[in-house]
Amino acid sequence: MSKKSKGIGAERELLHKFWANGFIAMRAPASGAIKYPSPDLLVGNALRKMAIECKTTNSEKQYISADQIGQLKKFSEIFGAEPWVAVRFNMTLFDTEGWYFISMDDLKETEGKNYVVSLSLAKARGMLFEEVIR
Amino acid sequence: MSKKSKGIGAERELLHKFWANGFIAMRAPASGAIKYPSPDLLVGNALRKMAIECKTTNSEKQYISADQIGQLKKFSEIFGAEPWVAVRFNMTLFDTEGWYFISMDDLKETEGKNYVVSLSLAKARGMLFEEVIR
Image 1 (cartoon, each protein chain N blue to C red):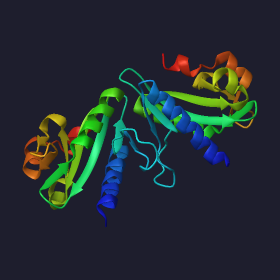
Image 2 (cartoon, rainbow over the protein chains, first blue to last red; image 1 turned 90 degrees about the vertical axis):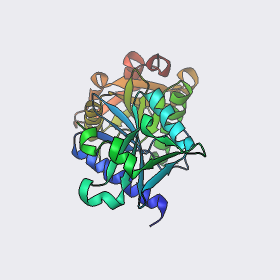
Image 3 (cartoon, rainbow over the protein chains, first blue to last red; image 1 turned 30 degrees about the horizontal axis):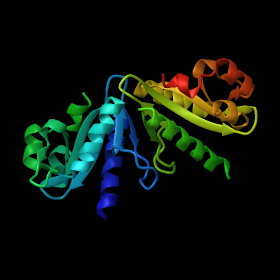
Image 4 (cartoon, each protein chain N blue to C red; image 1 turned 120 degrees about the vertical axis):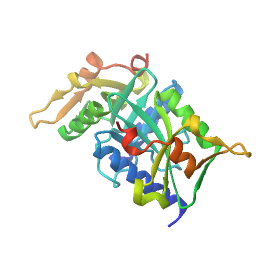
């Protein structure tokens, strides 16, 4: 499975989980169309809106480009939504279903000005799906 | 041009207009994926969210199925957005750019339990783009 298709699978998994818990979740249309900033998922109910960038990894670290984070923040600010990065660490699938939600404040900047979410940071600071929907 | 592709063109036109006026506008992904209710456009800024079903017509009447309106209302209620139907009457393109925004209360039910927006109703009760973004 390509990196791209793994990402789409992960997005869809979260999409179903949010719908199953009473939220609207909308995927961005396939790129190639017009280029406006757009998160992987826009999630909301009457009380709360979240713009979510979804990642899945088999390693203990997930890197995210400064550009993606910049677009996520910009989209969220204009729309009025909370920006989140959701990372599924596949090695933890058995104990937590793997998903951790990381706020912008908890992203760690790399030397190359990009961002990284490590599994240890996710466990220490991330929220689980059940916490995010509460 | 098929009915389907005309609809997509109209959606994109509105998408650009909203972005150009400081709103986020997101198209629903192409159908065929998973079937959750989804409007043609989800538009928002920090103050206001709108779920919009977009139509374009060469005639003086635009029909909309009860099912589409039902889905639009359901989506809007869960997400916390205002439901709107936007109809572009192509014959009016020269004087108003053609777009009229119709609220749910102003849709007229047909005998077959579907809905219709006539040009005269749109002129009497609809809002122009400039009014919607104000």
